[in-house]
Image 1: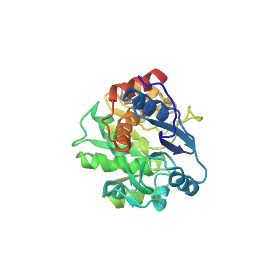
Image 2 (image 1 turned 90 degrees about the vertical axis):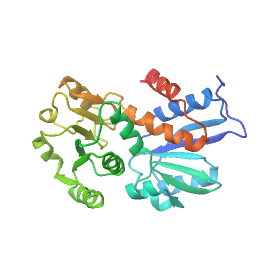
Image 3 (image 1 turned 120 degrees about the vertical axis):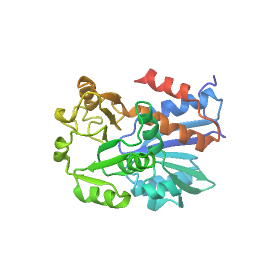
Length: 273
């Protein structure tokens, strides 16, 4: 395996978030070393999104992952949007081709693949809380795979917009989730429960039913309070890091043009968490 080093020809990739995570660098850099690629991946904490995107051009950064809360806001600063990302209305991946920045969305791929490790989506009822970029990607993926989504959100207007954009069902505010009993898959597509507020949960115990599938998109901490509670309730659980690895495969292949080494990336992640 190649030793980690940075030279004058090293291609830089990275991610931006309000609270950066070390998991992205660990996953991507392990894959670069395994395939002997002269790439390096870094995580950046960002407060000024416009200047950050200007920096991508100025520094020649090859690829950039975009995390909450920037997935919708970032669109206005890009040169081109992939058709799927445009339909979703959110970007989590940027590729730089000679200064031209194109936005993509791999969140829907990560979510679908993580869900399909546990269950089929076709014909299933999905209860989802959230209406931001991740939520939009998941709704797109569920619909593409033949599932039906009911959306709840703290800000009802955002939920109504999501429902109108995708032709799905509005459940109501977050406080109304407790009345949902007849579902197959339950998804937290918000940042609730993420570091440092790791004890917070979006769903009450009454919603968690044995045999149901629960996905939490939060990957820091790797095992959230929701995942712990769902497992105790007899649910089949999907932690956010599964979605993270699957969407990272798409990013890796887009940036490098090489087939991503899934087992290497998964092993590096599991060794860390």
